[in-house]
Image (cartoon, protein in one colour):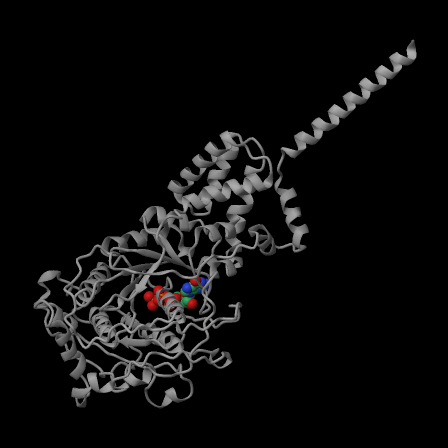
Length: 563
Ligand SMILES: Nc1nc2c(ncn2[C@@H]2O[C@H](COP(=O)(O)OP(=O)(O)OP(=O)(O)O)[C@@H](O)[C@H]2O)c(=O)[nH]1
């Protein structure tokens, strides 16, 4: 009797125990804990610091491409100025990619290009690489009237460049202002030692040396911005310095080796590790905690706001997360990560065109203005981008329209010399618009592929500056339409950067943003905010002071770095 009963009871008990065990296991698996995740990460690569962990999580992400360049004809719906009359333009020489196949992947240990990069400490350490620049030389062409020391060229040149175009009433005068075309360091003695030796303004005119302060603009340029009726402000002091006898000097200084441009964001991802802590860790921790109550959602919102995503992006991200979680609850840490990744990437508008409009047009170079508040990294970014372009086989001409600070032009010149790009610069306090005009004229004349103009970045609160910027653009467009206007923003200043950005956006039509110093902030979320506020894509990110610490912005790679 009892044997059967006993067996039955034992079986029943065993069954119950088994069911309880199974239930426990299942309920545990639904829980995702941050601490669990972390230790797992450590296990994988055995490093306690977050940096390594990122690598594993990325699944070895490689940014698919390098920098993407495009032609900017349609870029700015600005009134294109009358096309250049057939000038002595050299058909945009089909420069062949001289691209140095970079074997180097390390960017650390590169020189810090500081405020004043005039002294390239690393020059000797680098492998000198010959990047054969298309022979721009043709001294005779521009030189003829050369005998006259000072004004011959610019003065006349500007005018000349102006006249053929539609009356150019204003153009000539405006542009006629002081201009200095200075080619790489062909100057005097001191230049001897290093090819990169910083150069004072052009050799000749004694002028500028004395510690000229970087203060307010000179006489007229500021208010001289009087729109169209600009005609009056005629021949401002046509004081010019040096027609570029140095032209040919462009030829062959020691040129830097440039790091490979492809996959840079992937390679530099470690620089974003601080941002990772701010967004990735806490967000994943919260999302992984299973069912989220309102407090948890608030915490998620706070995290995003703290990371500088801004309210618009934060709200959008939270709403998307809520919707997704409602229909597809996350069950594993990987699920949580995948969901967050997807939502964040969507919020970064991967559909935006982030190509840099730096490809030449049939009859003229592309023209790029680099604008932004002082100290954000305009000059540095211009130099870094010039390197990328040169590495891509492009002929680049840099226009130092930041005449406000002498060191800025020196700095740009140094960058130019290091990659073999021509530099057109003006005397300190020269009219920036004039320098920009001459740079573009020179670029057209020499048939370069792209002219990049570094502008001054005085405080946006000075309306004079903004007028000046507006004037620079107008004057430049008398020579050629501007294809790209890159606004450089410092990621470390957070919301203030956006205030500045809006002011600039009111004056010029910004077509792309370069967000610098992302290596120095835990608030990588600023990228979302900037795009949302300006409606303009972040195209470039600065991730360090090194010469190659500039990467194209790629939403996927960026989010991977954050998580
Ligand atoms: N850490 C870091 N520093 C950067 C980055 N970009 C630029 N810098 C540094 O920021 C400082 C200012 O850069 P500049 O290029 O001189 O800035 P700017 O906007 O041209 O300044 P002004 O000529 O005064 O208008 C320099 O020390 C640069 O090395 C970056 O991405 N990361």
